[in-house]
Image 1: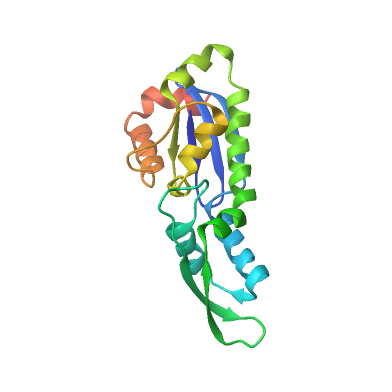
Image 2: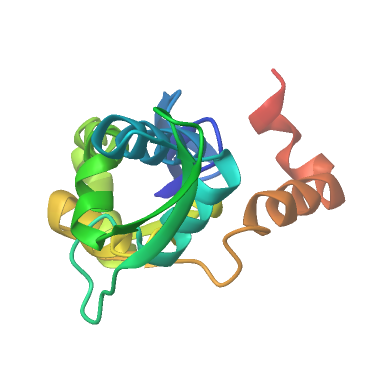
Length: 184
């Protein structure tokens, strides 16, 4: 089972014997997590922050579940009332609650895909687990959160940012062998 959490979408696929057995795709991804951080800061503090700042917050202190050793971060933005620059302090708990709905949607889609899996493949998923790819999979605590929700092992692949491109390259290199998966 592979979960690709990209910028705009999250796809979950159960693959067996060269074919896709179960597939779930939702239009929720890493950009939505950034937007949730921006919206939270605007709503709770009256401060406007940019996309890049929201992404930095997500990377620095964002998490899908509690992670030991968490610390707060200073965030700079523009006060919406007077237009002046302002600095606030965000806690990991605040960021986690801000992105909770988006992360839950991703987790629910993974579990829904797993539920659709045939019973014969359940043993394979229990043995091999779920593999996370894509930039969104780097969110701290996501492995643990998915593992608890799906009740199977979850692991982050070695190069999550490059995994999709590398897989596409391998398909092109051995196109004759995999052509049946893409064309009828």
